[in-house]
Image 1 (cartoon, rainbow, N blue to C red):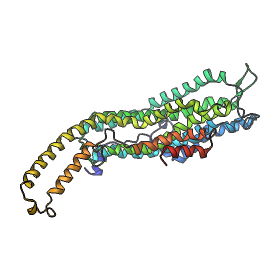
Image 2 (image 1 turned 120 degrees about the vertical axis):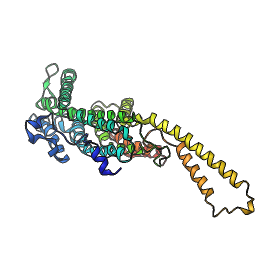
Image 3 (image 1 turned 90 degrees about the horizontal axis):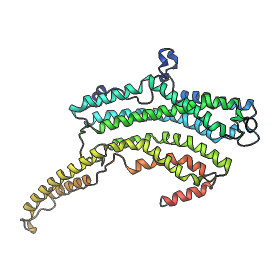
Length: 396
């Protein structure tokens, strides 16, 4: 099937990049996100989240206060979330939109979807896109984002010591101007962008789950070592920036704890490990939906190619074992290479992976999620020592 045909039969799979904001483009068209470039989105996010905090903190003398806690400019978390995580999520979503759409089209272009299943496959795409463009979902996510901010206000703020967010003596502290903007604008925007991204990744999970239930036309001897589904592993490469962004948003908070309390980074090793597993699982997890299909394809392929190989070997033995050695034309006959070629195919089938990605594709994703925490670890351990340990672990 040609590329043009595949694209014409399947709707656009713009999972991240296009669309409106809360459905308000129908009321005020200029706010359509489609018209903004990645750079413009990043600039607007900084202007709404980080820059007002700087101005308001400076007004009350909290840009650089008497202590680290009183100094907005020494807060690692606001840098990590508003200057790194949010802009990087916008950047990564553009890349992921392009890659995910090509992945979806490839199912049709490569003939993996049977003719009888094409209607269901295209229907799955349409259903995902319907949910993706639903304005009600955006409003619910915004509600959750403000619920998160309110939880911070009610549960976290009362326990905070004096900082650029809080002013006043013990027992009579209240939010500073920057603290109010932090609760009312900055954190809700961060949470909304993150929740919206996670929701759309959830739609990707939904699409792959439904696709994995189809009877795909796979070949156990496919050179990609995954029955023809190895192209799904390409999604992990485009997820590296997103993994880094999500990890950085939490690593910044950990850096504040380490700097303020003198706690050791290693004392949070289980929390970091749990977060890293969660981030890697967020992007690699849905690819494991094809485990059952790949296992069945490998089992059936091994039996089929084993039967063919045995039949070929039987014919080969019957033909050549009766010929005297001195009469064999071993250099000009193709029988020997044919037997070798089929043996190689059978060996490839037996080595077929049961997940559609390689360890070499998964490792960079894990490293991207780990890097922000290595930066925090550098507050405690010299960078040179960290690099030596990493090289030693890698076998260098």
